[in-house]
Length: 389
Image 1 (cartoon, one colour):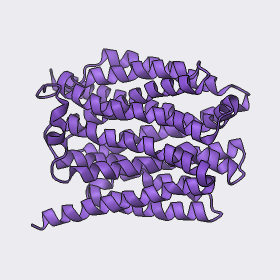
Image 2 (tube, helix red, strand yellow; image 1 turned 180 degrees about the vertical axis):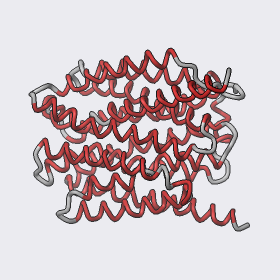
Image 3 (cartoon, helix red, strand yellow; image 1 turned 180 degrees about the horizontal axis):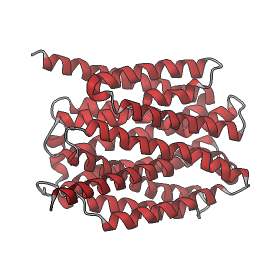
Image 4 (cartoon, rainbow, N blue to C red; image 1 turned 90 degrees about the vertical axis):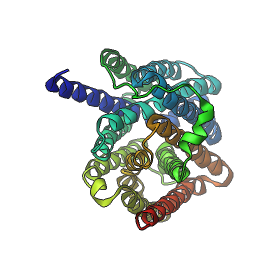
């Protein structure tokens, strides 16, 4: 393969990974703006709605663990194609079925697809951009932010034409089809050493040294981000009295801030250091949430996205630097914990809202962000200690 062909292939692979993350953000974040009409149509409470979301992140959690091992054994193309297939099946079912159980099953399948998306494109970028992975992981996450920002705006536009929340999801199937076609045509990097499918080896491979702190930090971060994104529209409507258009615009602004922060942060994190960058970002996120929740300045809730923005991709880069063997398996475990965070966050907000009121329930996002800061601080101090010894 000549150098020009290699560059072209790398560019095409990078483009499909960026498209995957755009689709990831769009699909995952249609659920927030469609939650109020879905609750109303099915006549269910916050807790039952939380259970439906819970199913998505159970699927996500399972997929991230399994796909890391599949990628090490069979390669990343299989993982990425399977992601598109599961996403198409899940979105189709979610837009057609009409009971909480069947919707939970459909969104569970969506979760499997999203979990495979989480592992696949991240692992591809890590494998082809060894020295610039922090830059490209953050830039790829910009596409996630763009899709996430478009989701509530797109939903709000369709709602203004009195379109059902189910139709909103059906439009997503067109982009999934385009992605699948492109993914089938492209050739992805193969694992350097194919390993046996052995779940028993995971503790020895993925839990060395201080890797567990990365996993727990990621768990609490994702729990906070997904909890905030999933319930912001409901919170702003029911607790702050905003109308449908305004609350969806706030959610779009949140994802716009995620996108902007990741774009700007992609040029900063390598210079400042991965762990120090995420430590400062989580501290600023805490401050923004305190203002947004406990004062009348609701705009600080979506502004938190600016500070959240770099945490996920930069922690991913830091974790991949910490261990250089069995990278896909390690990333799979990291994203499994992020999936667990996705389970915990919306579920915790939902049920604490039912038990103690929506204001108290939404405040759990602040607690989760504080725990994120704590575990990144532990990692930062341990890293500094290793450098000085």
